[in-house]
Image (cartoon, rainbow, N blue to C red; front, side):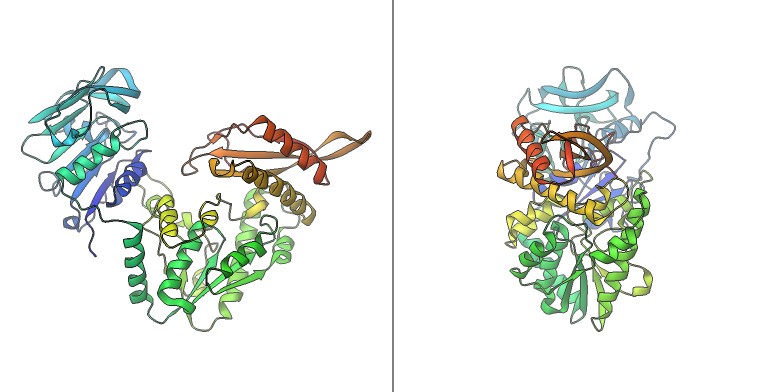
Length: 511
């Protein structure tokens, strides 16, 4: 089935991915491309959106897209920088704002006769984020909306299907933002809303069958959402020709290796569990530098995975749970990371000598879409709702060198914390949680005796994508009971602290 597509041109805004997610929520497929790398097959897109940008259209470094194949030829929605770009270079005027226009605002005027604002009421809250403002509309510009401080908050260009807004419809704080996007994409641009999890599964399975035929595929399972959903899709397409390998690096959560294997048993997957914990711990012995720990884990993973892959005759494909944000980051318009961002994704970045072709069934999806696809295929809700867990596992939550005893301590602490979150119905309200073992001892008193034992830090954060995060204000009573349980039950720990730092500046993990 051929879906209508939207092209989003990225000018480097922190909100660009949010635009894509809002469009996808309308069951419309979209792609993000850098403003200066417009796809050659532009005819395959039915509408175009210009994103915001940290740049100013008035600056010497203003970003100039080539809109010759888009403007007047396709419905065009210009957001923030895009709106100012059209004004500044098409007969209007953009100037510094008297006051920085940032945060909540309310529409004080709306042209309700235009389809663009169908279902949107005067007073609707919008989110502004710019230091420049449009003083004069471009040639043939027609005012559609204003706020108290921003006269030209929205406009269209007469004789074109071109619309522009200085606010951000994609963010949560723009109350009717989703409605405005739907008005543009459906009512004005005429796109069909047929991009659904069910259609994705059906089409992806069909494409995988055609691509892979009778070839054998190997996939490194992590127990996480992405690799699991990828495995189920591949299993639907090629059945027993899919070989899944789940490696125990000795740095998983308590009992996780066996529990994940048991969970996979009921899913009809061809899974082999490989316990290589001693191999990893030996490779990590005496290493305390975080980056060296990561490299050691990556190297051993490659070795173990390669050993296991060679036991399967005639394997031709490596499957990975790559998702769309990884693809976007590899082609950033603003000089972001290269494709090597995937060096430790799922299978640790396999070297060329393995000579395997790569298949990535999830590369068109965002994380929340992966979960919806997984739900549509009947994957267990508890698995789909799992918190993110770092590839190097507990190694980057143990500050300093790694020993089997330190892993044991942290596994016990982590289990009490995570199980407690579940028991208190807090797990699903937290984006990610875990415990850190600190390289310090502190004095304690237990049974009238002096102790000199480890300190652990608990961490729980709220986030949407991990790029920014706020610490979660967990109930004091929960923290009190959790701290007591850890100190009483885990030998070697006499002090518990709670991390109340946000990202930035502090990362979610400590290493």
